[in-house]
Length: 302
Ligand SMILES: C[S@@+](CC[C@H](N)C(=O)[O-])C[C@H]1O[C@@H](n2cnc3c(N)ncnc32)[C@H](O)[C@@H]1O
Image (cartoon, rainbow, N blue to C red; front, side, top):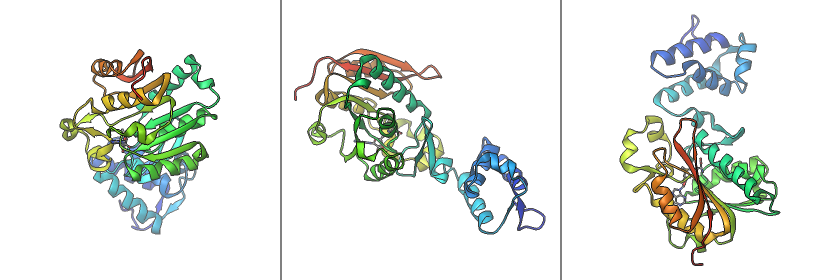
């Protein structure tokens, strides 16, 4: 990426040069990548790049932009470079300690909010909600924003993830209503450790079998936390979460979680076996079963 004098670029020319460079190296959405990185370096919006197309870029800004372009070409996800991802219209801080929130997970939130509205849970004065495997805190924080009277407990095994989630709660002004706990959902003592009685439990648990790890994109494999994604056995979290949920939910409480794209049938059996009924499966825009929810009919032994 050199212009004629090697030192000074005009914004639009730099954008075009970076786009060409990315395209040559086979990076998809080359223009968008260049725009996001340059806007990040210049602390501006993508629109500003065009409105101020003749703003000169040189010195430290130019060096930083070049360095970020190199990181991007090595496969580092844009969100880890800029430190931000939008989820349900809200900006979340992300780094390599947390999974980058995915658009599919917005369906978990939508579905849970819909079922809470139908079941009258949303109107309860102080709904108690548990988010298992909170990661960046995206589900917990948006639920807190949508339900101003709710109290939320957000749990993760990763201390690093909890730090990021707490920062996000603070950023969105909901930290007083979310308590963060480090706990292992696969541990038999989880229900006792976390305690409480909940109206709703949501979770986007790890669900990719170890055997599928090698098939994932480099961006995911090399940068996202493996513990956020993989499991030795596809059902281990669904089994554990529905069992713990049968102990932690109030009667008629709602359990709602994200599914691996290739089917809900077996998970449905696991969950109904733990005393849940009125099961619903919600598909994503590509037609894959994506969210499963159910109501606690028969509580587990407390
Ligand atoms: C798929 S990520 C979901 C993160 C976030 N809720 C989201 O939807 O973007 C799963 C999360 O579960 C956490 N996790 C993994 N194993 C766990 C365990 N045994 N107990 C509790 N949390 C666990 C990971 O650290 C990760 O943050």
